[in-house]
Length: 171
Image 1 (cartoon, helix red, strand yellow):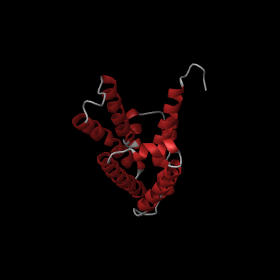
Image 2 (image 1 turned 60 degrees about the vertical axis):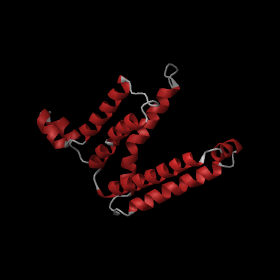
Image 3 (image 1 turned 30 degrees about the vertical axis):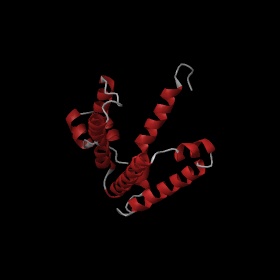
Image 4 (image 1 turned 90 degrees about the vertical axis):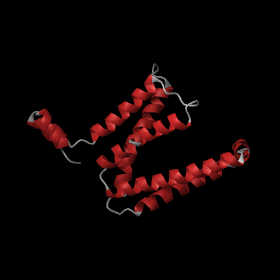
């Protein structure tokens, strides 16, 4: 790692790489196996997470923190866990049957809802500065930009044939 580069940028870059490549990896794993494979993919992911969390409960400080969660708060954790699991299963199902270039922009649309719900439900605990708004807009525009048909872009830009051939290659 470059000495002038703060560790946060390194880890943020790794996270961005993982977030960006996960739909591609999931799509390849579930290619042409049908929408019910989303249930299988979600079950495997959540079984692995359950094992890790269960092993984590052997750490006394973590177990103590879990035991101190109030009943009202625990209910919200359960609700969010159920809805996140359902969302993950639906995402896997969508990736199993639809092209990534359709699913990924729709997935980025969740940023809009997350932003609006945080603004409505949690305005005193969330930061809504210009940078956060700008970052959300850039992410949404980027997701929409990658969903544009490659052939349309190549025809519109009138690129040289050699470059258009490279960019138009289907993988």
